[in-house]
Length: 243
Image (cartoon, rainbow, N blue to C red; front, side, top):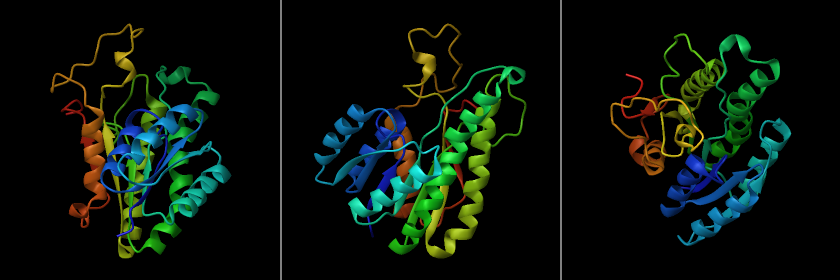
């Protein structure tokens, strides 16, 4: 089994946790960043402690040509590609009627379009590897078609990711490629825990946010051989938040 992975947006946060977890499990990993070069290089250094190859690659994956270049560079430098985790995505909290055109395009581009660009470029490499895993990052409750207050554009993008993933799953299973979605809720690094956050914290049935390692473990489940027969699924890591 070829163990070569690309995780987008992996200099910090959830992406970094997933990439380091894969490195700890013997995967060569490409850490992708756009502006966080120092953090990406530090993550690479940490990953190499596991005896794997780790590289840091810069790209603005909202641009399709840069997304394709990122994938091609990953496959060339790692000697193939079998796992893609799409983690990039900006959040927006604005009343729906007050979302500007620029904000709308930014949120859709950074979440949905980046997933489409990177995955489309990666699929030929996954087929060449003889097996593959696509893990996309959604959002808790994005599969529920209900009205939203202030995160409408974000949830529309994440719902689109779910539909895109399910469609790929049905198409690619014949090639031994699975496609699934991890949907985190509130995590330990979420903006609600920033010092300048003024609103009440969300009420979580689990009484705590998700740890980054819990989200990484969920992603690895879909990547592991235990999930060979599982595709097109959404796994929430939300402590019961959206129930």
